[in-house]
Amino acid sequence: MIETHGLNHISLAVRDPERSLVFYERLFGFREAHREEDSIQALGPGGHDLIVFERRDSAGIVGGIEHFGFRLTDPAHIDDAVHQAREAGAKILRQGEFASGCPYVYFEDPDGYKIEVWFE
Image 1 (spheres, rainbow, N blue to C red):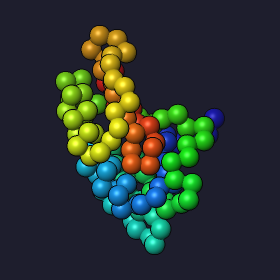
Image 2 (spheres, rainbow, N blue to C red):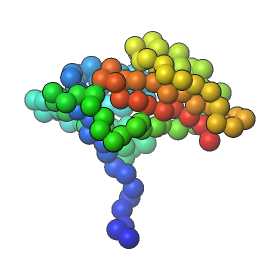
Image 3 (tube, rainbow, N blue to C red):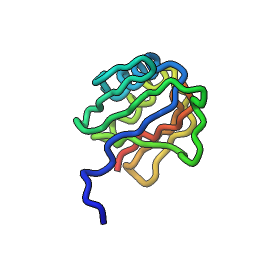
Image 4 (cartoon, rainbow, N blue to C red):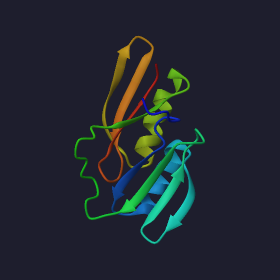
């Protein structure tokens, strides 16, 4: 086994890095950490989570990635998450509960990447 601190970052091909930064900043509290001509690195609220938004022609082509997720701190926050996602322009795909008290919602970001927000 390779010893690591866990998954550190994901790099997304996007049409507009600035637009993606604003979307993830607004919904999840990501903040700009580093900027280059065609990319922005954004640090998440966990302190070690990083999303890189890279301007690419292949924006939104997900390949084998089905979705990625963010876990809520409180299941009561699911309605607020849905509301904020809609306000940010996300397309709500589906929502429900995996089990009693374990709500989830799936939505798409501006480039079509699927995001899950859930509580367990």
